[in-house]
Amino acid sequence: MGNNVDTPTILIIIGITGDLSKRKLLPALGEMAVAGVLPKQFKIIGITRQQAVTLDILLTGVIHSEQIRKQIALFSMSLTDARDYARLDVYLREIAGGVLGGTPQRLWYLSVPPKTAWPIIKQLNVSGLAKVPRTKLLLEKPFGVDRESAQELVTHIENSFAPEQVYRIDHYLAKETVQNIVVFRHDNPLFERTWNHDAIERIDILAGETIGIEGRAAFYEQTGALRDIVQSHLLQLAALTLMTLPEEGGWQRIPEARYALLHSLEVDPDHVHRGQYIGYRDEVYNPTSMVETFVSLTLFSNDPRWRDVPITLTTGKALAQKKTEIVVTYRRNGTQDANILTLRLQPNEGIELCFLAKRPGYDRKIERVPLAFTYADHFGALPDAYEHVLLDAVRGDHTLFVSSEEVLESWRIIDATRKAFESHPDTLTLYPHGATPEQVLELEQRVLCDKFNFSP
Ligand code: BG6
Picture 1 (cartoon, rainbow, N blue to C red):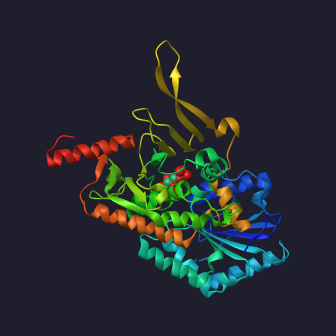
Picture 2: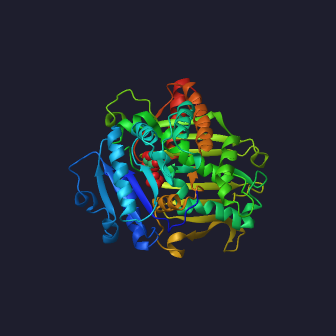
Picture 3: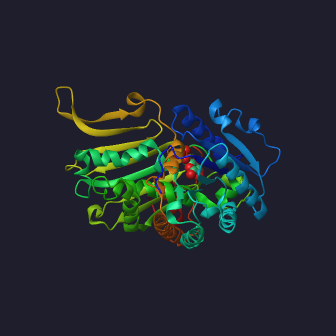
């Protein structure tokens, strides 16, 4: 289902008044309009359940491009009433015949929580809207809560939509710095030739945030850091870092390569750690909540290329720094310091390689020094991930989206991690706002030592 950007398109955003739409989707569309990358014939229909919302209220301060404002219309309806879907279909056909003059593709963007998404998918099926030619479905994570529920959802969606109609979004895959992982590896043989267990000692992937849960109490109580960040974002970063690159020109096969890598991963049950920031329980009005806001887990791949290389994924809210990075530590020569390659995904996007140099002076002292590249110095501002998400869905390119096989495989890993947590049900380290990941792990160590009465 390939489409170029000249395909007349109707983008139907369900949940246009929601947080994601206001913070990400609408601003991304505004930027795309200014950059001139949207199809020439393009219309956005925002579905809302609130009759009182007007475009002025919705767009003020969110979109500055006049051009895109003229292309947006609101349609108010109930998301559970079949008659409203029929009414919407008539409206979409009017737009297709009138403004767009042809058979546009229809992109249904479900910017709603999963519980709201499933009844909508059902309605799209029974109303026949899913089968309208050139229809696509865009879904936000989380895709389920465990492997079993994810499998149910996959089956449920496949009953209504063909696999190539479905675009599962993980906005991390669409970040410029994340797309660059493949280019960095593929186009720099210097690194790819040493990208294996012979040269590499360990890989650490971190996504630290300074923010807490920002009022998303109900969502977070059901999700926790493991499902919110590790299940898709961090496992996808691991897959891109470790996968076998598809043969020349095989970019369309990247989802398959990511899947193969995910399939090779196993959790080390002795290296799973979880924590919760102090104050979280008050925020969610649950004084006994055991939901984790911090997770660190170590995985191993059974791909011989990565034999015995620990891959550690760490994430947390309310930490000292907002920082997402992939740190590759090379094997050292004897007692020398290691070469370290850091792919800084955000902020201060860039790449840094630390190597050893002679410190000037009369003694032969060796020091680790950085060789650094930053996007800001070299390329300037980066497009937001959601611009790529929208553009690639319009074009019909699945490379930056997650396949159902990948979703199921990542849940296998998450379920195994939860099982490992359950074998230590009361181990949850309480950490203060602003702690570093290392401090959270040290705290855990101290609590364990106190509990079992041995010294660290
Ligand atoms: C979302 C999570 O998927 O990613 C949030 O639900 C998290 O909890 C966010 O804050 C982080 O995204 P980014 O792009 O700011 O790293």
